[in-house]
Image (cartoon, rainbow, N blue to C red; front, side, top):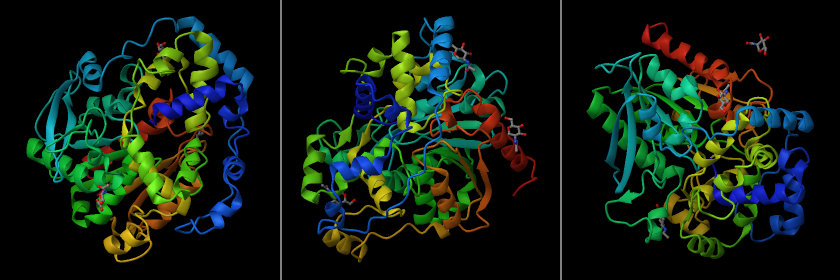
Length: 467
Ligand SMILES: *[C@@H]1O[C@H](CO)[C@@H](O)[C@H](O)[C@H]1NC(C)=O
Ligand SMILES: *[C@@H]1O[C@H](CO)[C@@H](O)[C@H](O)[C@H]1NC(C)=O
Ligand SMILES: *[C@@H]1O[C@H](CO)[C@@H](O)[C@H](O)[C@H]1NC(C)=O
């Protein structure tokens, strides 16, 4: 779910033999940061806002050798042929599995962004009909609706929900390659197009999606399932527009990227960029043309190029996933790695990444930090305000994995504690010690470990056993 650049970084690091680094075993971001950016930069004049300093949790032990052998075995047994879905887009995957699907590619937000939404109306097991309960799935950072169709056969959450009689809607946030149009701006040319983070996705994309759902299905109320950034979108939307709480019957947040102070993912390496003066951040933004492009099969060191030979897949590509999201050798279907890598790197704005970085750095969940003067003008205060999570009243269920390095359990606990107690109707540790950030989509047993539990709760609502 992150960018090609990071993938290349991970690939190169693995390449030059820093295996422990990739496995997350010896990875200590604080020492890396201290080396790159000595103490005084943090303490000095440049610091515009308080920086929290936390002990970073130690990553879970990696039984490297035995896992690599597993991988070799798995790949050699059946890994020669590529996953049949590898080069398919979300809608093509859905069509291949015979789902009755509608594409809405002209959902216009209040600020002019044009989004694409996929609606799964049903299939043979559960034919389309009026009045099905609606579940909206919202993807994480740097990915898109593809993240919900990564697994084999009927294991995917989107499929399970559709088979069980729900209408499933898949969001694609602004900036992803499904949703790159705008009524006035040109995403390729105009850097203003990319002036958004998950804040704007929550404020504009989320309500526009709700409106299309209600006008197309007549359903005013939805169930929401969000992974990672999808959880942040939910929290911001319900906190900033409390009236929307009425339209969410229940929200399920999988590893919500809300509080992130203890994150020990390599993405934390962004932190030094935030120590730079704002003018320099703006320069980097211009150099990147406002965005981090997703994977392009022809790019240098792209997942598609790197992940073909067996050995590469086991040593390098598998490790790239562990490196970025936490180690879990037993739940990763190694033969599926090229397919996963081809789908979890989609385009996102640089500002989104900076906004996450600011939350890493402050250990808070705040609005975007534009610098003192601009903050004062915009927010009436020097520091950006925190989001008012106490305004979230829709019943909310939270899930986390012990081996998640991007949103570690301790930060998920902070999120839980920031919500009103009556709001948190469920708080579940996934019953698998190595469960990592992307396992919510890719783990072989994600159905047993996570999805079935969500389906049970949804059934409770359907039959009035929960309100
Ligand atoms: C980006 O948007 C914010 C508010 O949404 C605005 O204050 C700022 O001036 C914009 N920046 C650029 C470079 O357009
Ligand atoms: C793992 O991948 C193979 C394809 O290479 C597939 O046939 C198998 O069903 C997958 N296993 C699981 C548990 O998803
Ligand atoms: C967790 O999983 C183990 C097996 O992996 C099982 O024995 C145990 O009962 C499970 N615990 C819960 C609370 O489901």
